[in-house]
Length: 119
Length: 107
Image (cartoon, rainbow over all chains, first blue to last red; front, side, top):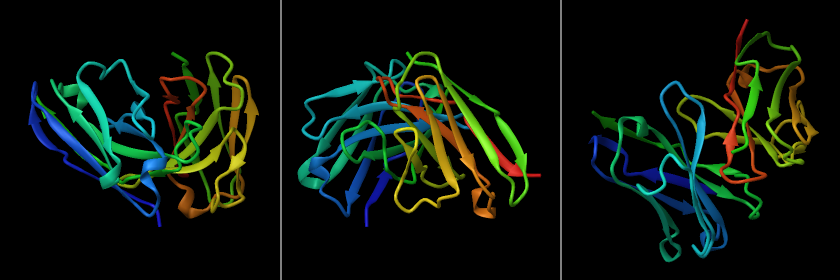
């Protein structure tokens, strides 16, 4: 069955960096577009970044552009989010999700990893 | 960016009730809208995509309708497992944007 497992979250000081990972299983990862989302405490869901299957197309939300980098390793069925210059407002649970048919909606999500940025 | 206004933000209902949640887009998004159910500590679950297509495995008591700027999620005969938060998401244009969410709790 399709599984997405995020890791790499934790407590970091403002201005610091973290790298999140998302390991996929149960499907042919290299053929799927992927995205990262987040949910801050008490807030709703927010899309933050998208990457096509071959990484030729990448998008970012304005809130993270220039600080976060999305990339993937198809040989390892893994998606990554490099987060630099972290701010208190980046505190959130981060989710990776799969786009089932390059249609920009997402059918499978991981359970998330918590990032806490202390000021 | 396309703004999505979701209402109500909270909804108290009983098992067996029919529940309706609405999302309005700031501009036309055709049918490019999805609905998600989200419970604390869990992965969001896709319910509906293309405004009205039921995701495989989702109970038929969930239905979606609408197009352009007005969309509705209906839950017929609310079940105990349905008490959760619900979000709509437009995917007509990047950045993808969500409604603010609707928390459905027990009356």
